Amino acid sequence: MFNYEQYSQLFSNKTYYLWNQLWQIINYTKSYRQGIEIALILQNKFEEYRFNFSEKEQNNQIRMICTVYLNMLDKADLWEDYLNNWEIIKENSIKYKIGDEYINDSRSFHFSNGGEDFFLENTKRGFRLSFLYGLHHRKDLIKYKLE
Image (cartoon, rainbow, N blue to C red):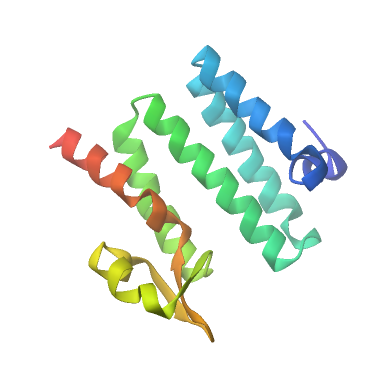
């Protein structure tokens, strides 16, 4: 498939535009099922090579892969799969603390908008929420569509 060097280049700052172009082509051609397959291949390669990267790099990579994977499931109208995978990804994002930092002054706003369910930890400057917090409105809409 591709080796460590090729995999690591996908996530380097120098080739970030290639990552965006890949997903733009998939969206433009509506090749969502192929996008799902690519995301799964990347996830497998991530598992194979993850320990070659810093914790921060690992978090960025898995976050990008999971976001694209959920996006492809959504666009392919595979909503049951989306919801099932959402829960698995959410549990792991909390377990491995993959998320974003927010300032303390915004705590009441985010928690009143569902952020409490995505809480990871308190920090010196505020608190961290799972990266899925920013996507939870889409998940709620998909859940509503299936009811």
